[in-house]
Amino acid sequence: MKEHDSKKRYLGEFYTPLIFAKKSLEYINKIISIEELKSGNYRIWDMACGKGNLEYYLDKSVYQYLYMSTIDKEDINYCKNKFKNACVFQYDYLNDDIELKDKIFNYKKIPNKLKSDLQNKKLNWLIFINPPYATSQVAGTNSKSKKNVSSSLIRDIMHKNKLGESSRELSAQFMFRINKEFVNSKNIYLAIFSKINYIKVNNNQRFRDNVCNYKFVNGFVFSSLNFESTSKAIPFPVSFIIWKIANNYNIKNENILLNILNNNCDKIGKKNYAVVDREKLLNKWIKKVRNSLSFVPLSSAIKVKVSGSDIRDKICDGFLGSLMSCGSDLQKQNLTAIFSAPQASAGSLSITKDNFQKAMIIHAIRRITKVNWLNGSDQFIIPKCDIEGLSEEFKIDCIIWSLFSNSNQTISMNNVFYKNKYYKIENHFYPFDYKEVFSNNNFFDYNNEKRFAFEYLKN
Image (cartoon, rainbow, N blue to C red; front, top):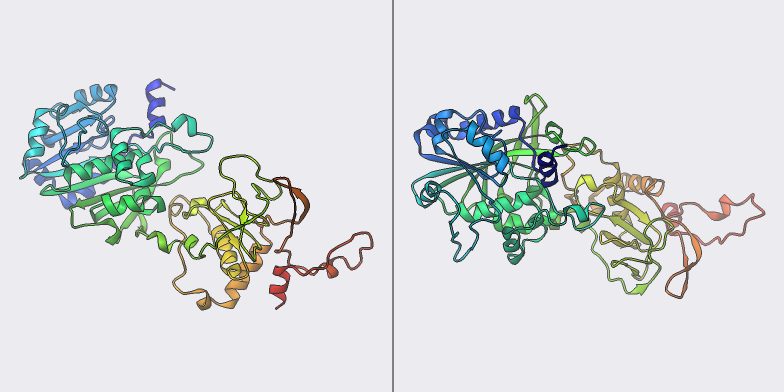
């Protein structure tokens, strides 16, 4: 692999497939006609132009109103040759000219022509962009290789604005600066290719509330498999959405209905991507109880967690087990399991007799749901009715399925040593009567104590 291509993959920069770039212009021209673009009433700026795939099918007569910038010099040289009449310049949109004082940028590196146009309040703007998709890692096997990929002055400002984990995403950083730069403009459209994290992901709620002053216009969604160098094992939805930007808009109030396109750009359906408030996420269905009693923590069914900075070794009164339920989107469904002791994860909670039904429903729903590229970023949400409104048949089905699922990792163990003390771990999710199971076994001593799951099903 060439060094240039390797860098692109590292930064999550994927050249837009031309067939989808052409389709995006069709959607734009439904809002802004080609005659309107030719008239000079609009300026177009692509701040991550790459090789200019987005602009490939743009009418050449519009080039005189087109600005193209990127950080990569090789791409700039290519675009200067390809788009003769456009204003093409090397520019780091996440670091250059950023000295925000009174929300004013210190324009020193942009061309004078662009500076003049930005100051012209009569002009309309179309931001046409496919920003990098990379996210800096905070944990896991790739944390070293990508921990600094999103470092920028814009990220620093986002931190100061307490915008959370969205600041780790390069695409969100582009959107943040675009908002600051254009939100007060007369007439501004953002036409953006991106993942849909900013719409759906729980950790991006502060970003949505404070940055996404958007009104939905139109758009489509397609599979990431259409991009070269993306993972074939875990495809994800890529959206192209046209937003109208203004201070009185916010994305959380929008009904985002996108056309689904196949690999040939044919429409095959529609997909709704409504914003979900974090308080409606399924993991919020169970109110976490106070854990104050020490107990042995587990990192798997039988492995005691003894090292690491995040060891959760507390349980509550009436503790039956632990439900691991990490993340709220469908792609995280494999991070769902039941343990007999506290599971060492921030996404886990204590199961008691009071929340047993809800815990089993959450476990079953997360595990049973079929995930594909289109719905992987959808969120598990709380049922519209309360627990009493769900049928008894449904609740029992979820309980039985969970008890016999492979992700039910509950066990019984004696003499488990942890912090200078021995513990006994009981399996409260064993659904049978020990006496019946071992009635013909004369060689095995058993404690015929009835476990919670057996008593629950019996009653």
